[in-house]
Structure formats: structure tokens, C-alpha cells
Length: 142
Image (cartoon, rainbow, N blue to C red; front, side):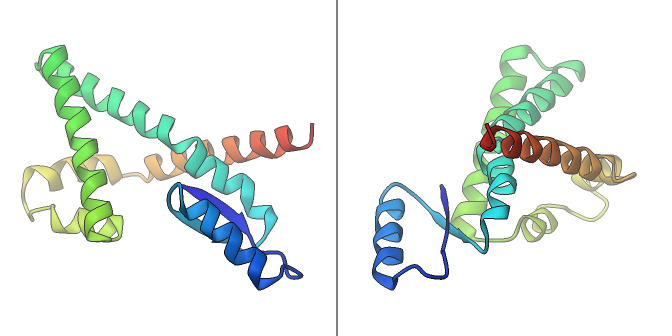
């Protein structure tokens, strides 16, 4: 995954050349301004570690619920692998996929009620991304 910024004076040939080079190694997203680079770094550059930490926490919760370490780790890993693949292959928005896998009155809904009850997870992620973006901005000024 790469991000790039189109400068106003950029020649269309140069923009296309940059796009060709960057898409050769993966997906490319264009940002509207350089000021968004720190936020992109926080989400995409640091995001894998955040997702891995979520997997760690999910596995630990599974172990605390009685699963063996090996089983909890494998279930957590395969769950994140599967949802990532679904998001990629279906091109669904995460909210759409979440709704499609949540049965009314089911176990997923019961868990989501806890996870989403106070908005703490969103606040925590907002603070996490903000901290990473601030650090990215600080590092870019060195």
C-alpha cells in the first residue's frame, strides 16, 4: 500500500509515471495534501501493529474463556485473516460487512453491544492514531 500527493504543478506524465511505479508494488491512494501524510502513516504504516495487538487481545480473551493458548491464537489469527480477505474480495465497507455477519439476537450482537456500548473503543483508536500521527509529524521535522 502506498500513498502519494499530486502537486498542482505536476505534469500529467509525471503523475502517471509515479502511479505506474507505485501500483507495481501494490495499491495506491492519492492524498489531497501533504498535511494528510502523517495521518496516512498512522493508519496504514502503524495500523498493522494495532491490528496485531487486537489479535493478541482477542486470543487472550479466548484463553481467559477457557481455550488453550494454541487454539485461541489460531482462531484469532484465522479470524483476522478471514475478515481481511472478505473486506478485500467483496470490497464492502467494514460497517456493511459487520452488519452482514451480525445476526439479530445472536452471539455477535451480544458481543458488539459490549464492544460498542460506550464508544470507548473509538475514542481509544482516535487517540492511538492521533499519537502516531503526531509522532510522524515530529519525526518528519528532524
